[in-house]
Image (cartoon, rainbow, N blue to C red):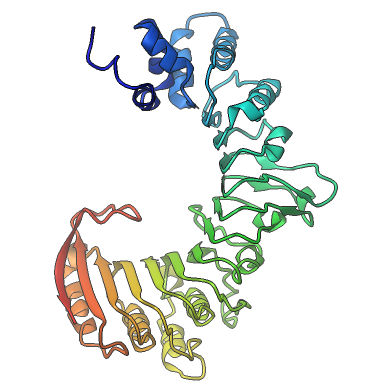
Length: 423
């Protein structure tokens, strides 16, 4: 007898979910109690660690044995299931040759899309050599879907409904083919749509009346949006927008600042702007115009980015100070919280914050996260100067934080220390 084998079945399943799938399968030899828990396990993960375990085992065997063993192991796991598969994760993008065949991928997805499985969450990261199985698009139980590393080329000749019960959809490094351009897909229950490092986003046109959160993030330096419609088409319905400011198109040298036509975002409550360089006039103009067109904005988060290569201080100052060119002409009536990460205290950053303070009559909290480095004395002096700026809101409190470490994840505030605060 042992202590944990008598635990409730759902607790043992939670334990197995936190193990690599190979180790979880090995628990079946411990006792019939653990065998039952393994066969009912509703979360299956076939990731890089799973496939590498076969690489080490078959590295001295004949070519092809490794791939055959991988496919056989996954097929056996599917066939032995006595419970529903609620969550399935498959990562093939880093799998060395031989890769699973398209027919194997189709077979697994057909098994998952059967009604008795009640699949709710699917992470499918395949490769350019695979196509997304058609049965996934009509599965009525999937609610959360993450797809990556393939070419989206769905051969539907006319507009149609896909992912009927889906609420969250994320694409990672997906290329949307020109062959789907002009096809309007209906995803009736979608609430959260995200694109990470994708190409041809404007080719993927959807209709989703329940959409609330929209994200476009790109970590590839120098890549720009081919068309601003990829996010402007949803501005009137979404509540949260997360966007890389570096994706905004920049005109040729000596050209006028490009104005993006933005509709009024009547429902937008939260804006997250990543890598915003206020020294770049185009990015600054876009940020100001976005704020101007967001009358219901409550929370603003900015991850600042300083790139001296595109710095034009003169044009930026003229944009901020000239009343005829400043895009924010009316107050941000219900803006409640502002958070700025990586604040460096540059002239344009100071003017930008000053504008926000003067245009936010109901502002309650401003959080400035700084990484001073070797310029801590300069940054701290600029922060003290910022604390003296006039504010439209008498309730506004400014918090200044300094990070202890150079790296900081987007939502991690555990490695910061409070410098000072003031009302």
